[in-house]
Length: 499
Image 1: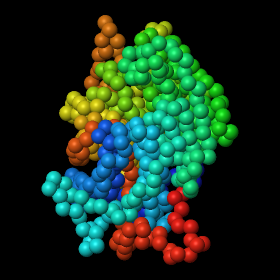
Image 2 (image 1 turned 90 degrees about the horizontal axis):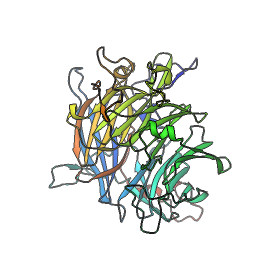
Image 3 (image 1 turned 45 degrees about the vertical axis):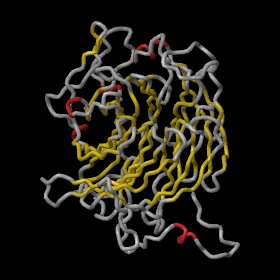
Image 4 (image 1 turned 30 degrees about the vertical axis):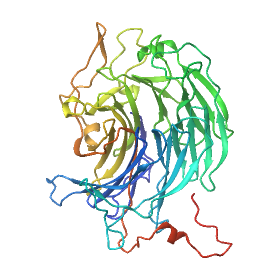
C-alpha cells in the first residue's frame, strides 16, 4: 500500500449532487441517485454478454440497496473463447450529447472485435420497449450500441488489450507482438516485437503443440506517464522494459532464483510472470506468478511479496486508491482460485515483522482483509473483477463497488467501505504465510465487504470489465446511430470520429 501526500489546493471538496466524480480512472456518480453499472463478460462459449445493474437505495439509511439486472446484449462475438476485454476511458459528461466508450474484445481466433457502447443507460419508452423473454430476466436493448469492425493484424491468440487513451489501443498476442493502433482510422502505427524464448524443456501444464515451445506475451502494463511499459511472456523467467517514446527495448531483468523461491516457483515451475500492473502513482508495479506475486519499485528491486494463505492460484489483480485527509493510499487486490479477493498493503515500511530466516529475503505484504471465501460461501475461482469508486450521498465517505466474475458464470456485486481497510477492526488478525511441515497454515482474516446481489449468466466467464455509466438525460432521444451519423450525401462529410 503506497502512500502519497496530496498537493495543497487539491484537497477533497464537497461536490454538487449531480456532478460526476473520477475515482481510479473511472467516472462515478453520487450513491443517493440511481447508479447504473455496465458489466461486460466474455466466456469460453464465445459469448459476449452485456448486463446493466441498477443500484437504488432508499432514503432510510438502514434500508439495504436493491439491485436490478437487465440484459443489454448477448451474442457470439468470436469463433473461439474470449480471452481479453478492454474499455476506453469514459468521456467527460459535458463533452457530447451521446457519449460513447469503445469496447475491444480479443479471443483465441486471432481477431480483435470493436464496439461502440453508450455511456448512458437505455430507458424504456414507447419507441424502445423492453424485449419480452421466457427466461424471466429483463432485456433492454440500447440502439446506440453497435459494432465497429474487426482487426486482424495479429497471427495468434490475443492475450491482453488496453486503452491508454481514447485515441490509442494496445494489444498483445501469442505471436510475441504488442501493437499500437490508432482509433481514428484503426491503423497500426507501431509494433513492438519481443524475441521468442529459447527452448528450456517443457514445464508441466504446457499446452504448446508438438514440436513447438511456449511463446507469446502474457501481459503488459503501461506506466501512468505513458512513456514506459513492462511486459512478461511465456517461457521467460524475466520481464522486459520498453521505451514507448522510441518504441524500442529499454532493458531486460531476469527473475533471480531466490526471488522465485520466495513465492514457491520451484525448479519444475514455469517461473514466468502471468499478470502485471502499475499502481496509480507509478511508484511501483506488481508481477503475479502462479501462486504468488512480487512488488517492485521504480528501481526494479523487490520491495515486498504476496503469498496467499492457504496457498492457492492467483488469477487477476487490480490497484485502487483510498483517499484520506492528507494522503492517497494505493491498495493491491488479487483474486484467487478458492473464491477470495485479498487486499494487501504493499508498502514494506508497514511490514512490522522481520523475515524469520535468511532464505526469506523479501518482506511479506500485509493482508488488510479478504472478501469472499468459505466464510462467505464463495469458493468458486474468481477469473476477473473490477473495482469501481462510488461516493456516498454525504460526499464525505468513499465507498467501492466490486464486480466479480466466477468461472461458474456467476457475477457478484460487493460493496466495500474505505474505513474497513484504513481502520481494521480490533482483534482481527492478518493472515501470514506460515510454512510448517510443508503445509501452509492460514490465520483468521478479517472479512470485509457486503454482498449486494448475484446474477447467473449461464456461461463460464473468462474475463470481465465494467464501468459506472453517466446519468441519463430525460430529454435525450433514443435514436439509432445510423440516424445520428447521417449528414446527407455531401462528399465533404466525413462521418463520426471514433477517437
